[in-house]
Length: 158
Image (cartoon, rainbow, N blue to C red; front, side, top):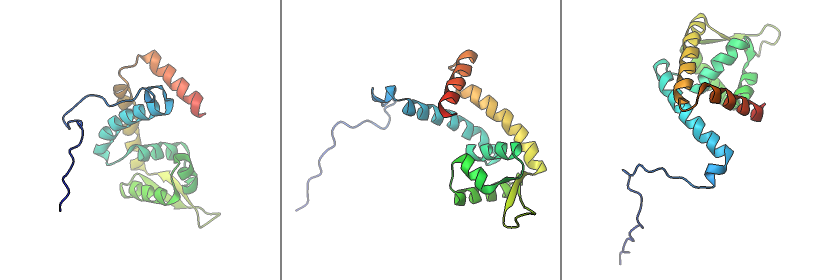
C-alpha cells in the first residue's frame, strides 16, 4: 500500500521576498562580515566577468605585481588556498596572458611568478574597476564610515 504524502507546513513561497533572518545572527560579527563580503564580492564578480576573472584571481594579480618573482607556495599561503588550487589559478592567468611562471636560476625546480606586459596593463584597469565596484557596493556608507570600517576590519585581521 502506497504511503500518503504528508503536506509540508506552510512553507515559504518561492516568490516571497521577505528577508529570512535570526536575531542571534544579527549579533554575530562573523555572520555580518560574511553577509557584507558576499554583497561586495557579488558586485565585483559582475564587474570582473568581462575579463573572465574572479576576485581571488584579481587578488593574486595584485600580490604578484607587488611581489614580482613570488613563489607559487608563497602566493598560495597568502591567498589561503591549497597548492593544487594555486596551480589551476596560475594556469588560468597564464592562459589569459596575464602572468608568467619563470624558472628560478638557483633552484631549477622552483618558479617565480611575474605579471606579463598584458597583465600589467589589464591590472591597471582592474584596480580602477575594483575601487569603483567597492564604492558602489558600499554606497550605504559615508566616506567617513567607509574609512572607519576599513580601520576596524584591519584591526581584527592584522
